[in-house]
Length: 272
Image: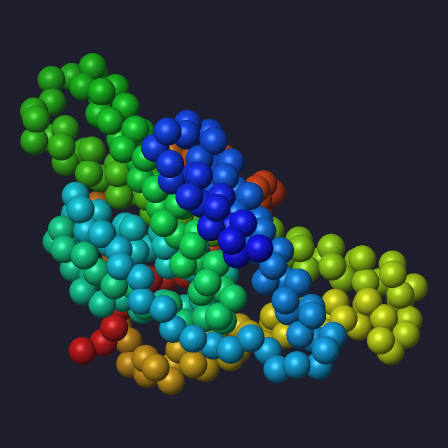
């Protein structure tokens, strides 16, 4: 399964494929990884094994263009949808790279390790295209200076990226919930709703394991980062960029299409 996912992501990142093809490959990869995590939880619960181990992963986020904070916020939201918590090192207002530190289950971190580069690639491509289009459109309205247009482009880009990440996170969170519900329903039908070792018990076991993962991740995160300060939010905001980013994030081909109303987590930064 992991090799299939890696193969799909290699095709998604191939410059020879179209945007639609790239999104379709990433969609299938995200779906496979999500289904795999649920299936693994069910299998462990059925065998009476210990839950998935908790680990840590450092992921480098580029600050190119001065958009590093927006990228961190977007990726932290997506990581939270996979049940991970995050801290950030070096998240300042410069073009320098920064590190987002993710704490989560081994399965969740492996999924993010493979998926985040492809999701980021799609997010950046959409942000570049939409911000350029926005600047071209407003240039027609009145005689903006070059400096004013560049400021508006940056505001739009950052708001777009933040909203894109939030929208993708909502879809992932809902997709995971629907997979758990489907597994529980299948288990109930297969066991007739009774029986100590039936599918229903297995599905309930998986649900409990996944719920317990959230608490175990939180405990480990607090142990590793007992003192954190809240990340200061960016002051620049573009309502048009946020709307466009959220819409594109909802429409992006991830194989996770369903409507939800869920919020994202706040980005945190490591305390001194």
